[in-house]
Image 1 (spheres, rainbow, N blue to C red):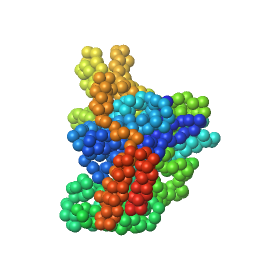
Image 2: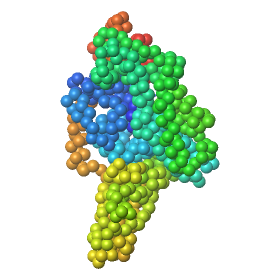
Image 3: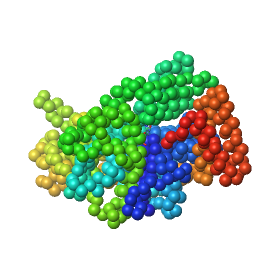
Image 4: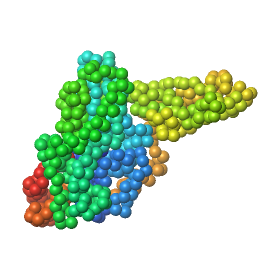
Length: 570
Ligand code: AMP
């Protein structure tokens, strides 16, 4: 069985293709969205999802969220005494999603389509693949999130040729893609974005406002000074921001060292704070339109995706930017996972989907480094010569011809780079290739042809050819499909497997208690006493080990917490 996974910064979701349609699979708590959070208990047991996200507030030193932002880097996250790479944290999350899907489906899941921001570079994509492998999944395909969203909106079912723009503002990334359905083929005409812009940045605005207001009373020089306090502020900022999606005012309330600190935020305050971030949404939109050569007027739909597009300030900014209302029939948090499920159906060659053809684009420019002789005779090194331009539809094969700098040169060497800077130093180096030149002192007369071939799975082949000598050299620079070294994979998988997973049948209790603990920390005075009594009552029923009684008590407990802080959110 192939599943489609939206591996999000904030939340993740799993979809499958069943009975001719895409559907989402609930996790062990019955929710379709699983917070992308990992936490260790004091006994070293692993928690993933809602319980882990709650513990981010009460136990930040044992919990991790938003690790997707660091995919492809070697940044280490310490949880207690254990250390994790971003891809290992993602692997733990994927492993949990896989287990949930297997439980809900009653069968083994072996393969997955995993979505990534269109803007992810090759390193980030490879890290995502490795995360899948570490979780014991064969990653059938990495699918760009906006492409997935377009599939969820049924672009492939439209009769007439059509174009639309997918505006995806998630927790940590912003992606804009222009897609075209032409003669039954879906093409991504352009993908741009900003992989450091999302809901979290809007949270930071509220955190800053809150902190500035209370810095003196808190006796702290920076908002990050106390991780615990920071998490509390973040949690309150998130709640306030969500509240502002449906109402005109919200309150942030943080208790710290037995004192309560509050801040009221109105819709207008928030709109004023958010203005610079809303402005930043324009650049990728303009670039996507320019790159795709598609005029705004010819777009059939503006599709909103990603939880942050629920914010009225964002919807207003989009409406203003395009001069019309965006489409939003599909829940913006679920579109990507549903689209991944459509893609999983395509992979499984479901007969209902046979007519859909999907193409993709190379999200960044690929090229080599060259040198140039300036009129004064000096050499200028490290100039980027693009061969496959950003947003070229893949698979693609392009060739450019170069020549040697010096007649007596016996070898030509090129670095292979990806990026958008004219100087290779600012781009990402992917590899190195060289080819010999014959002796004879006429090297500058030879044509050195350089061909780049990039396929749908992110595999790049670079080939050098000197027609006059018949020499050829080839290099596969990115083999994203290649599995990790089996011994290395096994070693890392075993290390992750050593983490004992908290018993899944107790997950709901665990999540409820984690929420109770956070709620306790966030309250003072009578509210705090009420929460403490409530936790005590629930713990007492858990002791009885009577499943029915525990379930009833849990519902009662959650209702009591709702009464204290409003309903929980995903
Ligand atoms: P995604 O990455 O698509 O799951 O989006 C997650 C982001 O959506 C987070 O930053 C959330 O704060 C944001 N989000 C989800 N629901 C809402 C809401 N009702 N109002 C404002 N932001 C929301």
